[in-house]
Image (cartoon, rainbow, N blue to C red; front, side, top):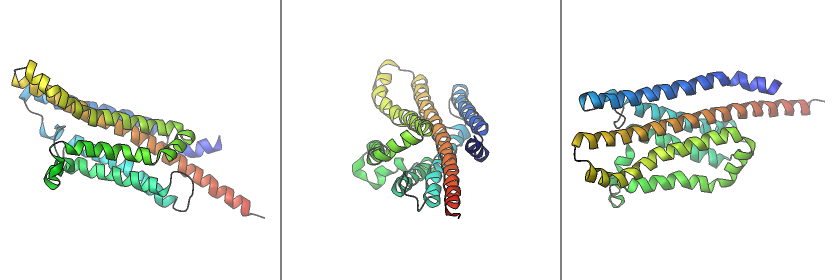
Length: 243
C-alpha cells in the first residue's frame, strides 16, 4: 500500500484522467469548429485548419509527440547504468523517432521529401513512414514482450494509441487513394466532394490526436512507475549496505 501511495504522489491518477478527458473534449471542439466553418463559409477558419501548418491542431500534435519522445530520452539518462529492459537503444530509437514526428508535424517534412528525394514520387513518403513505424516494433519485439508482461496496462494503452494513430494517419491516406476516384464518379458537386475530403482530413487528424493522447497517458503512467521502482531499488540497496 505504501508503494502505491508513493506512485500516486508522483503522478496523481485523477489528474491524468482529467487531462485525458480535457484533451479529447478540446480536440473534438477543434473538429466541430473546423467542419462548421467550412459549412458556413466554404473554407476552414485558419487557426483551426486541420490540414494546415502552425495551426492549433498541428501544434497540439507536435506537443504530444514531443512529450512522448522526451519521456524515453529522460529515462535514458535516468537509467543510464541500468540493465533492466527497455534498453538504451530502445529508449534512444523511440525518443528520436517521436521527436522527429513532432518536428514533421509542425513543418510537414514528409510533403517536402518528393523535392529532396525525387524517386520517392508524390506518395512515396507514405511507404517510407509505414516502414519507420513498423520496423522498431519488429526490432525491439523482445523488449516489447517484456514491457507487456511487466507493465501490461501502460503498454496496452501505448499500443492502442499507436493503433488508433496508424488508422488515422495511414488508414485515411489509403482510403483517400481508394475513395477519391469513386467520389469523382458518383458526386459531381464540387462543394460536396470537397467537404467529404475535409471530413476525411478531420477523421485523420482527430484519430491521430486521440492515439497520441493514449500514448502520452500510457507513457506518463509508465514513467511514474519506473521512478517509483527506481526509488525502491535505491532504498533497498541502502538497506542492504547497512551493517
